[in-house]
Length: 158
Ligand SMILES: Cc1cc2nc3c(=O)[nH]c(=O)nc-3n(C[C@H](O)[C@H](O)[C@H](O)COP(=O)(O)O)c2cc1C
Image 1 (cartoon, rainbow, N blue to C red):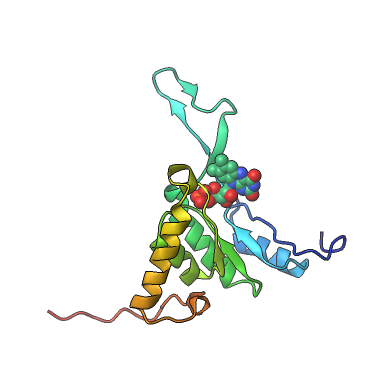
Image 2 (cartoon, helix red, strand yellow):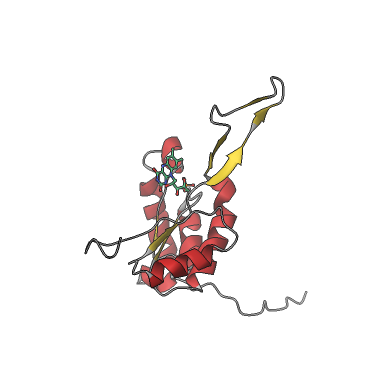
């Protein structure tokens, strides 16, 4: 794609792989401007009464809050593997979810499934993000990117 366009190229990475960071690295080496992840997880469900697959195609893409911890992990793995920006997504429904993705290394976030429950969810996330920045005295939202605190936990004495 890089060879045929000067437009920004942002590959969307599937989570249905063992090592997502290697795909982010391949994208970066091939000239991608950013990567976006994760896409949906290949999934399957069966109606136990009829014993029939719940989806006519048998398999479908799982999204929403159930996938969030796996998506956050994958963003963090990619953040440690590439220098290009990461657009993170997977189960974001509120500001804390969005901030979690940013701390794991997302420069931007995307909301998919939550829009089906509330088309104005972005508004709630934005307000919550502003509130978080105020409460934590953070003036520049980009300063959150990749800033997970991995220092040893302090012991708590009673
Ligand atoms: C109904 C639906 C349609 C989707 N269509 C696409 C698509 O066309 N291309 C794509 O890259 N991802 C598509 N996705 C994946 C989402 O963009 C997103 O990566 C994924 O659902 C995880 O985010 P979420 O939990 O916020 O939905 C779709 C997701 C859903 C639920």
